[in-house]
View 1 (cartoon, one colour):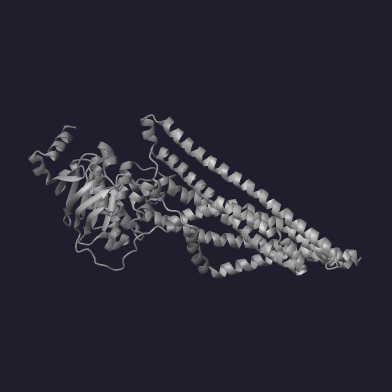
View 2: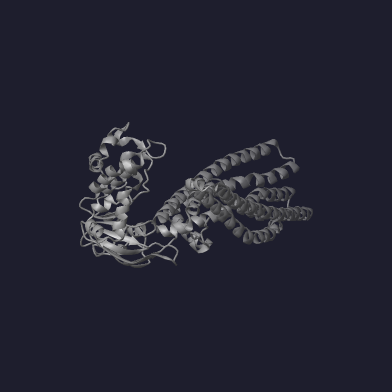
Length: 585
């Protein structure tokens, strides 16, 4: 079972690249960021007030003040708790909403970048890696945004205000508490450089495990056919064990980090208690002030501990975020503005060469011209390069050498959007999207009316069976809906072609899934859908070649024959032998 090479994997953004992507999104929402920080600051202030007031209470009790003072302090503590609770809840909501908006933007851009990738790039990287990024990694970041980030922000604000309050009581008490800061810093300096690579390896191991599982599930029929279930189970098990071992290593590292954090807390609290004792004995501070400083520092255990202990989750979310941003930052050619329009609907491939792995060529200098409005059939044995040539003609693959011209204009000059308006490809692997059937067809023309959709279906001969569905055009199809046959799915794809109305159509064995009984019907549908268009057909059935204006025979990535069907049969060459075998079958 092949594994993607290191250089073929999708990129992972660095910390700087990730921050450079996030910063403009925060600037775009500057107002929401400011409001979130102000509400968070209010919540942190309200959380500090009870500890400060408790010091005052200690001093008043020592002075044997009246009960009215105690009541006033109790009311202050109660109001602070209410305000702090409400502000903390609102802060969590605002942070989750802000993060959700940015994450939604990131998801959309990730999918857009993935869809813009050349097929060869995606195949080399492996679908499992991409799937793990848009599913597991996106879920990891989503959970961090909703559960971790609000607490991190609240902890930072509370820690800063608590330290300021301690300094306000007496700078020496604040200085004593600051003894723990170098110890926290040392703990982080020890942990962070070790944690980042561990979490990156953990996310990568999850991606590899997903890749193994996806390959086995997608090829389950082949796995059963060749009886290699045990081999695939071992491969999946090995990938899962590797992922588990990496996770155990992460947990071991984090446990050692916790010990260093506890030592910092012990040293800081000990320093404050000792300094408070000495200052009270010297009448420099009151008992209440020393007690307030100790309570404030003790209250820092939770926010600081939360900050440090969720670093594993922050690291995991950061690694996932970097993997998503890595896809977003993939370089894609900018869409050209304006540019020449195709002079006609002709299709030219000149000295086209192509290699999937960068070494062995599958096309060797193929030159092919399809005049406007004509139909050319590509035939040849399996592996001859027919589908590769068709994908290059449609712009799905980029040639390694040579050029492709649509009406005398290169696809790069047209840009993706204009190219899709001029050229469309239909393969045997059609997909029916989940939802109402009419919306599935409107993918080709979003503004199409029900009459236009019905007309396209009638053109390809699909309208009768569509109208016979329970809800007609509004019948829900795809996953969880009405199941259509392979031939019906192909007719829907051909109806989309009619709606898109491209000048050039490429059919890559688009009738191969019909089977013998439905082949003639589907061939008629394809002929109707492409009538009047420049058409390049990868002929699975040689009956498609009979009706073509010209037949091109490919073998081992080279054109070995071309001409009308009758001429090639009479010539007695490679095509004649293929035709004889077809007729005999």
